[in-house]
Every structure is written in structure tokens, then in C-alpha cells.
Length: 61
Image 1: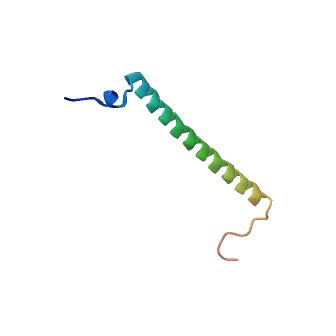
Image 2: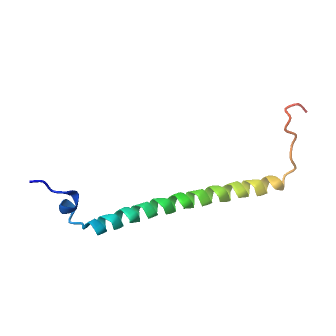
Image 3: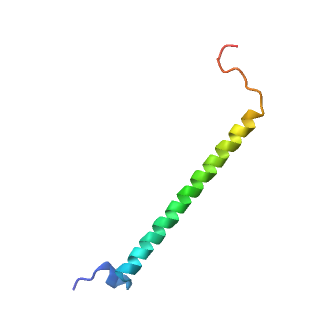
């Protein structure tokens, strides 16, 4: 007596596909939000440095 995974959960193949797509979309949106936050933080850091005079970066002064 063998059962496939859709029979165990009661999901049809279409519902299973929808669940996978929903999970993939959620992961993609989380990744894109994290990227946007990182870009915003980097832009803010650049703007903060632009207002400060640049110090010499040669190691020797």
C-alpha cells in the first residue's frame, strides 16, 4: 500500500504548486527587502561622509 505525498496531505497537485510558489514569493520578497535596507544604509553612510571633511588616507601624514 503506497501513498504519494499529495494523498497524505490531501492537497491536489495544483494546491501543492500554489504552496511552493507562495513560499518562493515570500522568500524572494524577504530577500529584496533586505537588499533595499542594505542599499539605504549604504546611501545614508555615503551622505554622512559627504558632510564630513575627508581625512588623509595615505598612512603617512
